[in-house]
Image (cartoon, rainbow, N blue to C red; front, side, top):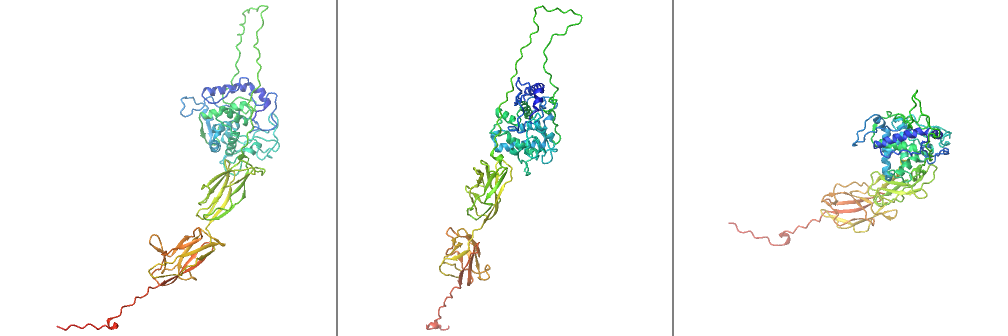
Length: 594
């Protein structure tokens, strides 16, 4: 947020000394990276020179250079665990307390950036420093259960009266002002910047600048723009200056960042220290220490009354005044407006083709999910990483056997997933497309896998099947499966031994199938081979112990069915040998009795 320009140029000298003294004190207590303003910066250094006026818009500044809180952290910073120093505790613990929801939002944003842009090296303490300077940590953590500031936080109207002139860009949707824009929320985004960088980090379906989770995530992305590495001092300074183009703002944020790096703790929401000392107010004291006095020049003691003072010689020159050293205008490095990453431009992920996907087991899907990444005006966004994920209970996989795939949109904003191939599980599942690094609503594709089908089963011509009881059928049986006239490989065919074609129920007697473990069953499920054939070899079907006519019933998904006759005959009765009288042989003569 930028200060009132005219006021800062008139009143900045004292605040510059106060800033330098406080930053020097922090540095003396081992606070890292506290950068005092240059010695020639008596005016409080701003990116706008003394002869310039406020810029006509907020370009290059997340907040439109709105006012900010100039209060500095206590000189006695909290001890970091394990530190060898033992600093006295005065105001430190209260200022080091960060409301729980606010702290959580900063940490979540840091973790999110760590996973999507690890090279940025964003510390959460930087977000805390900006949050402290912009809104006093959401007015001391006055947020509701969802993290939304209550009441909402608004900056002054940017009407050109000492601030930038920014005409309304949001119809008052965020700031309630239909004439001029205002900085909004805990991180004080102007509406035009929020339109580009706004996030829905708490997944409530809204991008709300007054929500600390949404605002912290947006600030994290904004600070990391242009491939910045915030572990590099030059990039860190550029990031903060892109938020508010003021050297004094830079030093204030760095002071709070260093303070929180020394230690912090969570406190309940709503119990934080309320912000004071805004940059556009008349009192520029930092609100934390007594006002620092400007140094005085020693003078000759006043004459003692009644004592005759010697007169100077007639030709003695008067007091020599030190030469006036011309001050140099403040030098602020140019701020490059952030480059918006492609993912941040996406407002909608639209389904283009193949929302309903179907195939049979073991087969490839004929289409692949396709989405379009569109911005708020409906234009395609190129270079966006889209993640496709197979969810649900299924063994369907992408062509490389994976369940996830990431595809980058082309110049037309389109992304198509790799080809999908079904496994052996039937059922429904979902292919979900999301924008990597964003929390936009996903695009879901419904997918269904069904059994392979055969509308016709036909026995390949062969011998009739017959066997005697107690033996097995020695004839081979082959059945061909087709679907719409084409061979149907991989079809699951159910084979059942029945006693009637009109009332096909599994038989309780007669033939059966021999299993590999030596048991017998009368119902089996087999799969047709790559040639669409199902084969029963010699000995696969046992005749059983009951003579009669039975049937092998074969059915397949898709309606295919056929019957094969099974004839079981009783074994032939052996012919008895004739008796001796019947054969004409003389009967034996009985031996005489004793």
